[in-house]
Length: 111
Length: 107
Image (cartoon, rainbow over all chains, first blue to last red; front, side, top):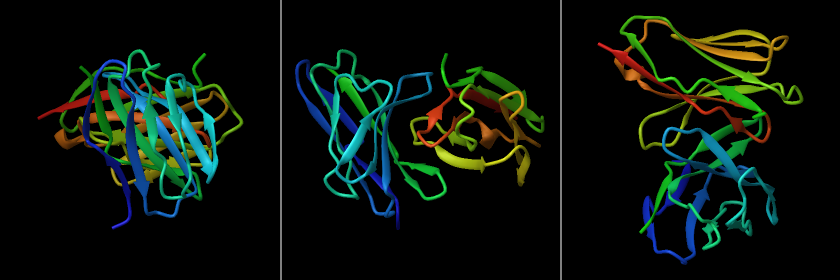
Protein backbone atom coordinates (compact mmCIF):
# COMPACT_ATOMS: atom_id res chain seq x y z
CA UNK A 1 0.00 0.00 0.00
CA UNK A 2 1.13 3.55 -0.68
CA UNK A 3 1.90 5.74 2.25
CA UNK A 4 4.33 7.59 4.44
CA UNK A 5 6.43 5.60 6.88
CA UNK A 6 8.09 7.22 9.86
CA UNK A 7 10.56 5.48 12.09
CA UNK A 8 11.18 4.94 14.86
CA UNK A 9 7.78 5.39 16.48
CA UNK A 10 9.39 6.13 19.86
CA UNK A 11 12.87 7.47 20.43
CA UNK A 12 14.77 8.55 23.50
CA UNK A 13 17.65 10.98 23.31
CA UNK A 14 20.25 11.83 25.87
CA UNK A 15 21.29 15.39 26.40
CA UNK A 16 23.87 16.46 23.82
CA UNK A 17 23.05 13.73 21.30
CA UNK A 18 21.96 14.13 17.74
CA UNK A 19 19.15 11.86 16.58
CA UNK A 20 17.72 11.25 13.12
CA UNK A 21 14.08 10.56 12.35
CA UNK A 22 13.36 8.68 9.17
CA UNK A 23 10.58 9.51 6.71
CA UNK A 24 9.97 7.48 3.57
CA UNK A 25 7.10 7.81 1.10
CA UNK A 26 6.13 5.66 -1.87
CA UNK A 27 3.43 8.02 -3.14
CA UNK A 28 5.69 9.63 -5.75
CA UNK A 29 5.04 13.02 -4.17
CA UNK A 30 7.46 15.83 -4.92
CA UNK A 31 6.99 17.89 -1.77
CA UNK A 32 7.76 16.72 1.74
CA UNK A 33 7.43 18.41 5.13
CA UNK A 34 8.42 18.07 8.75
CA UNK A 35 6.23 19.38 11.56
CA UNK A 36 6.57 19.45 15.29
CA UNK A 37 3.58 19.11 17.62
CA UNK A 38 3.74 19.83 21.33
CA UNK A 39 1.03 18.59 23.72
CA UNK A 40 -2.20 20.49 23.24
CA UNK A 41 -0.74 22.56 20.45
CA UNK A 42 -1.00 22.68 16.70
CA UNK A 43 1.56 21.82 14.06
CA UNK A 44 4.61 23.99 13.53
CA UNK A 45 6.56 23.75 10.30
CA UNK A 46 10.24 22.83 10.71
CA UNK A 47 11.48 22.28 7.15
CA UNK A 48 10.00 21.57 3.76
CA UNK A 49 11.28 20.39 0.42
CA UNK A 50 9.60 20.98 -2.91
CA UNK A 51 12.02 18.90 -4.98
CA UNK A 52 15.04 16.65 -4.60
CA UNK A 53 18.23 18.37 -3.43
CA UNK A 54 16.34 21.46 -2.33
CA UNK A 55 14.77 22.40 1.00
CA UNK A 56 13.75 25.50 2.93
CA UNK A 57 13.47 26.43 6.56
CA UNK A 58 10.05 26.62 8.08
CA UNK A 59 9.01 28.58 11.13
CA UNK A 60 11.09 26.72 13.74
CA UNK A 61 14.17 25.36 11.92
CA UNK A 62 16.75 26.22 14.57
CA UNK A 63 18.36 23.10 16.00
CA UNK A 64 17.18 20.88 13.15
CA UNK A 65 18.67 19.77 9.85
CA UNK A 66 17.34 17.83 6.86
CA UNK A 67 18.47 16.34 3.58
CA UNK A 68 16.62 15.41 0.40
CA UNK A 69 18.89 13.20 -1.65
CA UNK A 70 16.09 11.00 -2.93
CA UNK A 71 12.50 11.77 -3.81
CA UNK A 72 11.23 9.12 -1.43
CA UNK A 73 13.23 10.13 1.62
CA UNK A 74 13.35 13.23 3.84
CA UNK A 75 15.17 12.48 7.12
CA UNK A 76 15.16 14.98 9.98
CA UNK A 77 18.10 15.33 12.37
CA UNK A 78 17.41 16.82 15.76
CA UNK A 79 20.72 18.25 16.86
CA UNK A 80 22.05 19.01 20.31
CA UNK A 81 21.43 22.67 19.53
CA UNK A 82 17.68 22.06 19.86
CA UNK A 83 17.15 22.88 23.51
CA UNK A 84 13.66 21.50 23.92
CA UNK A 85 13.33 18.58 21.51
CA UNK A 86 10.74 16.51 23.37
CA UNK A 87 7.74 16.49 21.04
CA UNK A 88 5.71 14.56 18.49
CA UNK A 89 7.25 14.84 15.01
CA UNK A 90 5.16 14.46 11.88
CA UNK A 91 6.37 13.95 8.34
CA UNK A 92 4.09 14.73 5.43
CA UNK A 93 4.08 14.76 1.66
CA UNK A 94 2.00 16.59 -0.88
CA UNK A 95 0.56 15.48 -4.18
CA UNK A 96 -0.44 17.73 -7.05
CA UNK A 97 -3.56 19.58 -6.03
CA UNK A 98 -2.09 20.72 -2.78
CA UNK A 99 -3.39 17.97 -0.53
CA UNK A 100 -0.99 16.97 2.20
CA UNK A 101 -0.82 13.51 3.75
CA UNK A 102 0.81 12.61 7.04
CA UNK A 103 2.74 9.73 8.48
CA UNK A 104 1.90 8.26 11.87
CA UNK A 105 4.49 10.34 13.67
CA UNK A 106 7.53 9.81 15.88
CA UNK A 107 7.67 10.53 19.59
CA UNK A 108 10.99 11.93 20.76
CA UNK A 109 11.77 12.19 24.45
CA UNK A 110 14.90 13.63 26.03
CA UNK A 111 16.10 11.64 29.02
CA UNK B 1 0.16 37.51 13.83
CA UNK B 2 -0.07 33.82 13.05
CA UNK B 3 -1.20 33.04 9.53
CA UNK B 4 -3.96 30.73 10.72
CA UNK B 5 -5.77 31.20 14.01
CA UNK B 6 -7.99 28.59 15.60
CA UNK B 7 -9.73 28.45 18.96
CA UNK B 8 -8.14 25.46 20.75
CA UNK B 9 -11.25 24.73 22.80
CA UNK B 10 -11.80 22.22 24.27
CA UNK B 11 -15.31 21.78 22.95
CA UNK B 12 -17.74 19.28 24.47
CA UNK B 13 -21.14 18.50 22.95
CA UNK B 14 -23.82 15.81 23.39
CA UNK B 15 -24.24 13.11 20.78
CA UNK B 16 -26.38 14.27 17.88
CA UNK B 17 -25.46 17.94 18.21
CA UNK B 18 -24.32 20.13 15.34
CA UNK B 19 -20.68 21.12 15.82
CA UNK B 20 -19.16 24.30 14.43
CA UNK B 21 -15.37 24.61 14.24
CA UNK B 22 -13.82 27.84 13.03
CA UNK B 23 -10.55 29.36 11.85
CA UNK B 24 -9.42 32.71 10.57
CA UNK B 25 -6.55 33.35 8.21
CA UNK B 26 -4.49 36.41 7.38
CA UNK B 27 -2.72 35.60 4.09
CA UNK B 28 -5.00 35.91 1.10
CA UNK B 29 -2.33 34.72 -1.35
CA UNK B 30 -3.24 31.06 -0.93
CA UNK B 31 -6.89 30.33 -1.55
CA UNK B 32 -7.18 26.71 -0.63
CA UNK B 33 -8.02 25.29 2.72
CA UNK B 34 -8.13 21.94 4.40
CA UNK B 35 -9.56 20.34 7.51
CA UNK B 36 -7.80 17.45 9.24
CA UNK B 37 -8.88 15.17 12.04
CA UNK B 38 -6.31 13.87 14.49
CA UNK B 39 -6.97 11.11 16.98
CA UNK B 40 -4.82 10.92 20.05
CA UNK B 41 -1.20 9.94 19.32
CA UNK B 42 -1.87 9.56 15.59
CA UNK B 43 -1.00 11.49 12.47
CA UNK B 44 -3.69 13.86 11.13
CA UNK B 45 -5.97 12.54 8.41
CA UNK B 46 -7.49 14.69 5.70
CA UNK B 47 -11.22 15.31 6.08
CA UNK B 48 -12.00 17.91 3.45
CA UNK B 49 -10.41 20.50 1.23
CA UNK B 50 -11.82 23.41 -0.70
CA UNK B 51 -10.54 25.96 -3.18
CA UNK B 52 -13.40 28.37 -3.29
CA UNK B 53 -15.83 30.35 -1.27
CA UNK B 54 -19.12 28.78 -0.28
CA UNK B 55 -19.96 25.36 1.03
CA UNK B 56 -18.67 21.89 0.29
CA UNK B 57 -20.43 18.86 1.71
CA UNK B 58 -19.25 15.33 2.37
CA UNK B 59 -21.67 13.21 4.33
CA UNK B 60 -22.10 14.73 7.79
CA UNK B 61 -19.32 17.25 7.19
CA UNK B 62 -19.62 20.67 5.57
CA UNK B 63 -16.66 22.97 4.92
CA UNK B 64 -17.38 26.65 4.45
CA UNK B 65 -15.09 29.44 3.29
CA UNK B 66 -15.86 33.13 3.53
CA UNK B 67 -13.06 34.94 1.72
CA UNK B 68 -14.46 38.38 2.41
CA UNK B 69 -14.04 37.90 6.15
CA UNK B 70 -11.13 35.39 5.89
CA UNK B 71 -13.09 32.85 7.86
CA UNK B 72 -13.24 29.07 7.38
CA UNK B 73 -15.58 26.70 9.16
CA UNK B 74 -16.25 23.00 9.52
CA UNK B 75 -19.73 21.84 10.49
CA UNK B 76 -20.43 18.33 11.74
CA UNK B 77 -24.05 17.21 11.72
CA UNK B 78 -25.42 14.46 13.94
CA UNK B 79 -22.15 14.30 15.85
CA UNK B 80 -21.04 10.89 17.12
CA UNK B 81 -18.70 9.83 19.93
CA UNK B 82 -16.33 8.59 17.21
CA UNK B 83 -15.98 12.22 16.07
CA UNK B 84 -14.11 12.97 19.31
CA UNK B 85 -10.70 14.14 18.13
CA UNK B 86 -8.67 17.25 17.49
CA UNK B 87 -9.63 19.12 14.33
CA UNK B 88 -7.01 21.17 12.51
CA UNK B 89 -7.51 23.72 9.77
CA UNK B 90 -4.78 24.41 7.24
CA UNK B 91 -4.16 26.91 4.51
CA UNK B 92 -1.92 27.37 1.58
CA UNK B 93 0.84 25.80 -0.34
CA UNK B 94 3.21 25.71 2.61
CA UNK B 95 0.61 24.27 4.90
CA UNK B 96 0.29 26.51 7.85
CA UNK B 97 -1.98 24.98 10.48
CA UNK B 98 -4.20 26.32 13.18
CA UNK B 99 -3.66 25.23 16.79
CA UNK B 100 -6.39 22.58 16.54
CA UNK B 101 -9.69 22.33 18.42
CA UNK B 102 -10.16 19.37 20.71
CA UNK B 103 -13.73 18.04 20.38
CA UNK B 104 -15.45 15.59 22.70
CA UNK B 105 -18.85 14.17 21.77
CA UNK B 106 -20.53 12.64 24.81
CA UNK B 107 -22.92 9.68 24.41
